[in-house]
Length: 342
Image 1 (cartoon, rainbow, N blue to C red):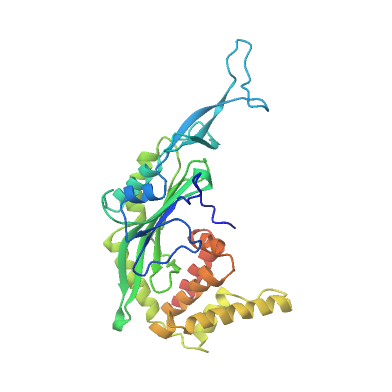
Image 2 (image 1 turned 90 degrees about the vertical axis):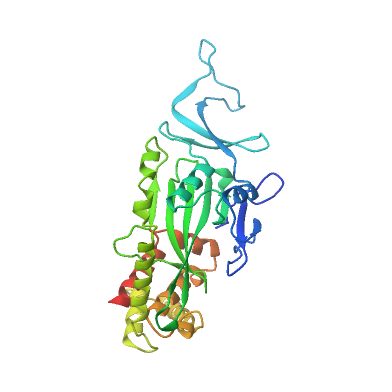
């Protein structure tokens, strides 16, 4: 799978990302590096992502591109369809997609500024970590840094950076989506603890009631000090679970997440054993048990690190699965969490 980033006519990738500190450079090494966190204005300009999307009617044309006309000479209009087009800052126009008649355009800037309001920030605050454009302008994403929380019983001091990932589409497929994401600064793996009564993703379709629906975002996402505290307490519960090497707890978790398949072939058995070896190697390193002890928290993060980074050689595929709350990768993380605390 390719990175799907959009490019300007002069070959510049439409993405910008903050650098410095413990921030990782994007794996594809494309886009504009920006020193430290930035404002919405600076990041949109750097990523060339502040284009306007227009909603237009759809006309019938022949194979040569000439309009098809009615008997009275008027152009034939497809009444039950609309189209989105991108109006670039240089005045040029690019087609995006056909959409339904209920579709309502929300500009990239508008969606991002609404997200800032949800987290209590303003467009002048330097909180932007990434901004990018995908698929010819059809899709837009950004990451807002929300600060960090620390898991720190007995001096463990494991830093969890908190983000809000914002995405929207102009193709009638991608909705407006705000997602809570928690990244361990030590290894940059996505943590999905799945706090049992907290929603992590808020979604709104591009329809006429989108503004009313978006008013509920803060409540649904639980972007509050209370949410951060619950996350920390859940992580500390996992830290209290002992899981030394060759223990029943370690075996139960790994065999539960990576079970023996029915009628397993020798090749499948070998692949499973290789997977377990990879997870165990991650478990004992300094990012996990080597730094935080042989416990449920380190074990959870070893599995998450494997799923996010080592599961396949396709880094983009790994990243997309890690950010998808419905993927098998996310389900395995949630299962790991449950088995650790069982």
